[in-house]
Each structure stands twice: as C-alpha cells, then as structure tokens.
Image (cartoon, rainbow, N blue to C red; front, side):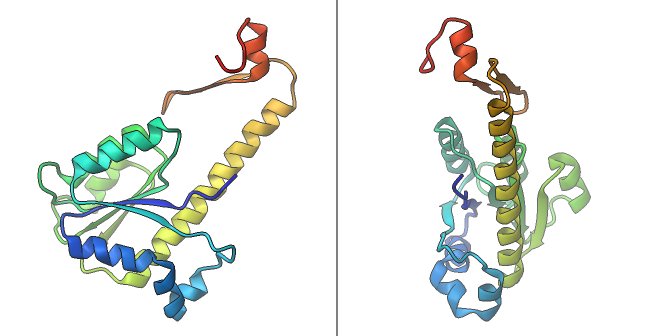
Amino acid sequence: MDKNLTIFAVDDEPIVLELYQNIFAKEQKSKLDFFKALDNNEDGDKVDLHTFTNGEAYLKALKQRYANGKRVPISILDMRLPQMHGLEIAKEARKIDPDMTIVIVTAYSDYSVKELMEELADRVYYMRKPFKIDELYALVHSNLKEWNEVAQEKALHKELSIDMTQDGFWSWNPTNDDIYFSPRWKEMIGYEDKE
C-alpha cells in the first residue's frame, strides 16, 4: 500500500497558504536541521499539498477526491473565512471522513478549544496564529505517519480476513457507507467481479 501524504489546507490569506507550501516543500525541509531530523522519509515521498481560499472549493475538491476512492489524512483549516466558518467546514469534512485529522489554525477565539473538541470529537488539533513553523510541521508529520500506519493495518486486516476464507465475504462501514463485496461473494450470488 502506497503512503498517502495528502494535506488539504484552507485559509483566505494567500500569504498563509504560501507559507504552508514552503513548510511542506522538500527543499525547505532539507535546509532546516530540525525538519531534516524529523524527516525519516528516506524513500523520497513528497507531501501532496492542496490549498484553498474558501470552504466551498475545499469541500467540492474533498467530495470529488472521495468519489474517486482517494482519502485525505489531514486538513488544516482557518476559522474565520468568507461565506462559511471553519467549524462548519470541519463538520462537513467529518461527514465525509470521520477519521481525518483536522488541524485548526486561527488568530481568533470564536470557540474555546473545549467547544471545538466537543463539536469535532477525535483527531482535532488547535494552533494559534502566529504559529511556530516547526511545531506545525512536527504535528502534521506525526499525524501523517500515524494515519498511514493505521490505514496499512486496516488494509492488512481486510486482506487477511479475505485470504483466511474461501467463503464469500462482504463488509459495510456505516460511518462512511463504504461497502466491499469479495469476488467469491459476488460469484456465489450470481454476479461477475466487475458488477
């Protein structure tokens, strides 16, 4: 299974989005000793950062990505955005993928950290602007690593479950409505694998 190093970031200030580009660029990491020490990514994988200036564009791209069978491990969200508040965006993102890590980076305290945690539950982090670059990098890097380890473990579990039995197998994840039917299951009920 390939690593998923995708990050979606939303901020209405282009300078902040440019900063994110610089933080997660391979060239920038190699210039800074702290980043280099953190980056044990020896196989040359590169972060796939997508930036958006508003919530509508972010949610549209997120839905499209999931419709294509791809996931986003981490989203970095500003809170005060035009048209749609960051908390609304985060709630909508959670409907698409409850396992996504959400990093809130804001200069304002529209909500307390406790309120944000209650609204978004697990895998939510809060950083105040101006933030320290190395802290954001370490947080995102650690969460990408953890997300990929969990995804790999789930894929392996699914693969082993299927391999251990020649009987038909199906699985339904009610949180994201993902349904899987094994080729043998399809055959047993009269369908071909492509159907």
